[in-house]
Image (cartoon, rainbow, N blue to C red; front, side, top):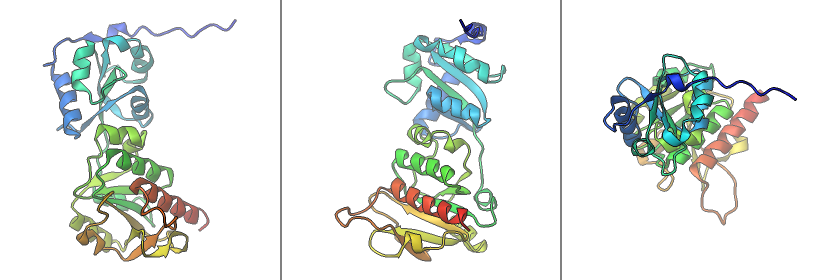
Amino acid sequence: MARMPKQLNTAGRLRQVSSRQNALIKELRQAFSQAALTPDGHCAIEGVRVIEEAIRSGLRFKALFFSGHAEERAQRLLPQVSSHTEALLVPDEVFRSAVSTEAPQGVAALVKVKQFTVEDCLVTSAEPLVLIAAGIQDPGNLGTIVRSAEAFGATGMLLAEGTVSAWNAKAVRAAAGSMFRLPLAKAGFSAIAQALRERGIQVLGTSSHKGTAVDQVDLRRAVALLIGNEGAGLGRHAAAQIQEFIAIPHSPRVESLNAAVAASVLMYEAARQRAHA
C-alpha cells in the first residue's frame, strides 16, 4: 500500500488574532471594501483557487488569513509561500467582517501585484494587441475579458475612466489568475489615445449595426480593441477615436452581444490570424 505523504506542521506559523482592529485585518477589510490596492501596492484576494493562482504567478504575499473553521487549509497553502509571510488565524466572525463574499471559504490574503504604465502595455510586442475597457461596469465582465486577453495573446489592457476597478474581488475571481500576469494600466482616455497615436496603433471598435465582419479585418497589425459600456456602449469621445468598426455577425433576434463575449470573439480571431501570419 502506498504511503500517504506526511503533512507539514504549520501550526507554529499561525498567529491567533481575535481583534477586528488588528492592523492587518483592517488593511484587508479596507482593500476589499474600496476595491483598490493598499497604499503599498497590495491587493486583497480570497479563496483557495485565487490564492494558488497568485502563488503560481510568482507574487509575494504580505499576509495570509485563515478563519477558525478553515484552519486545515493552512496545511495546503503555507508551505507554498515564503516563511516571512504573516499567517493569521482569526475567529469566523472576524474573518467574515473583513472579506467580500457572503459565504467565504475561510482563506484570504494580501498580495503584492505588479503595476504597469500605459507604455508598458504597448512595448511588449512589435505588433501590439491591446484592449481598452472604456466604461465596463460589471466586474465579472472585466475579469472575463482579462482572462480571455491572456488566453488569446493580448499584450496588455488599458482601463479608461468609468471602468470598474481591476482589483474588485469579483473581477479578480473572474480573471482566474490572469489579473496577476497580464499588463494592466489605468489612465484617462485622452492619455491613452495620445499614446496609441504616437505608436501608430489603430483603434478598432465593435458595433452591432455597422462595420467590417470580424474575419475580414486585418488583426495582425498593431491594434487596440475598444470595448465600451455594457448598456450604453461607447461614449462620443471614445467613439470619435475609432478608425475602423468591426461587426460580429449574429442572429438579428439578438440586439447585441455581452461585452465580455464580444471581446473574447475579437481576441480569438486576432489570435487565429496571428498564428497563421
